[in-house]
Image 1 (tube, rainbow, N blue to C red):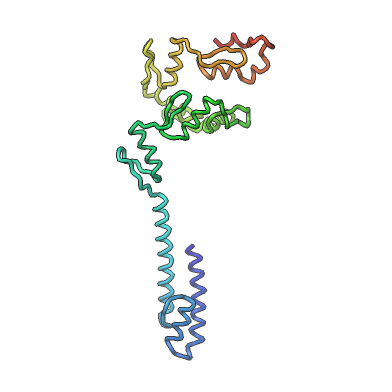
Image 2: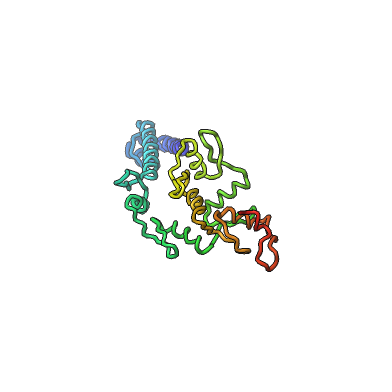
Length: 261
């Protein structure tokens, strides 16, 4: 931008000098002023042309820099502030959504299981669990997922990418949440305790899985042979491509039924 302005001003300066030379015989300030005003849009006398051009150039650049600075300020401005925790937001709706974390308000409810959410989009994603809709499919193995982030995380099993590294022992992980869970092993934090045997866990999900040992609950069922499992990944292993075609025709008995207890 600055270079273009300077080039443009240089051309104007040459043009003014030519016009001044053409009309110097007349010796009238008015004639010179008219020609300069015509091409520079400023009134200046012949003896001040050089000074005035420099001033106009400086003013032009100054205005550009000021406008550019204003744009930067506007783009980064977050005028909506939470009165509870002082977090700032660029949009009012983001603030309203955030404030629900303080009030506990969750106006969006799943009509299948009654689970509630602060925003509509998480509810839409959640409802796919009930409908079985899996929009995101892996191009490598064909496995499909309810959420895009789950697909992205899964694809790392093919690429070997592990972007989340532990600062304590430098172990790497494919998912951020796995790293967070791992970090708790360094500090010894196990906030989730079983009410039956008092065994503690770093993650709530691990506690829920453990409690099924006490309740006998097996919520994951094979659609081919009706075998049930306490954990989802056990069901996935049971139904994995390696087992395809292993079902004994028409009897509803899985040839791999005894491999997973």
